[in-house]
Image (cartoon, rainbow, N blue to C red; front, side, top):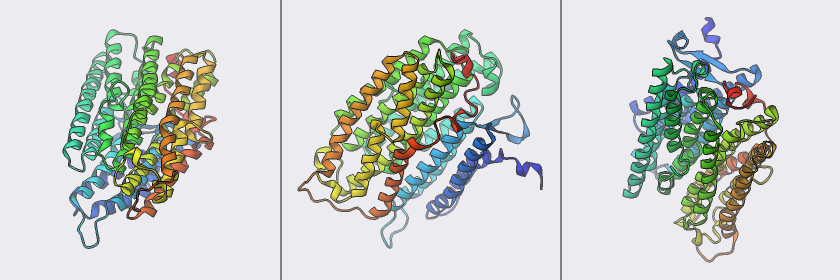
Length: 504
């Protein structure tokens, strides 16, 4: 057997190509096959993600694969470190759960043929999965741009899958923000290539210096990615996009798509530009994250619709991810505080992806039972969909940050890093964000369990969908008990240039 067949790096190729092949096959075959292909490939994709994470963890080193046998700068390198492996796992879990939910949601009535919307949905989901895996594994900034565009243009049609005027308007707004972000990112890559002659992340990590062109390039790229991540105040596209999107699409958009662009921001900050990082830039990013936490929470408090409340909660929870940047800059107690902030940030990404996917899917069942998603009309809806309301409650506990949830563990690690580094103001913001999350979530939960006079109908195929939602919520609730911290998987391949980012 050829040695190349035994190369574990081929797992990285499979992670990208399996869903991509499924998307192409769905376009070539009759529409009724799209869902079957997606469900046939999902166990394989999940197995590949598990195998990548296991290989990285057991080997204690990142996986590499040179595409075509050509190493950078002539060729392209796929690379899986700890955060990449985590992204692959979370993507496979959330997409699989959203697919199971959507399979019941999109199932045609007896005797009816498969709808065109269902075919488009499955094709887009496989394309999105492939693009997200490519973002997690890419090692070249231009090819990461291509993967990010595939991710964006797979996500935007999911927003307007229903075809109403309001959803089309929301998708157009999303498109405008995404295109502006893409232009800024592409300008930055052009400047970096013109300055250093390469776009490979590992090679750039050893070459970037405080040249004006490099500083401008990284500023443009981070600004463009922040727009795609919906970082405050560039979040204006996200709530309308969720308002009319199908529940499964909202779960994937909030749980995964915005995380892809954040993943690239982390790659830029800790791998490409450690020599360019300054305290002012780090604190500016932290301030935007803090603004997202506070502004997103206040806006969530003011919403009358459940899906919009959850959408603004996403704006707030994204802010916690960006606090990792100032907490990892200029750390006096490098090993303890840096690992706490690093692990806390990635654990927040994972727990939020699971919890928010569960909340959007639960909200879909609640709205289906009630016939609307107006919060003031949900008194007693727990009688119709008790498991969905339980899942919503468990996911809410993770967002608030109550133990033993993953949200609690993530926020505790970030708080610990804040105290250890003397940056108490970030701790104050996080505590305020947790209290505000309780203020907008607990009244909804109380209404769902209260006695009400409204008549609610149990949705079709509710049992399967409630099981899926509960599984996601339980995973988010138990994530705090995992071995993500003390650091294990997440410390493997820890930022190529982390030492230059202010961490001795």
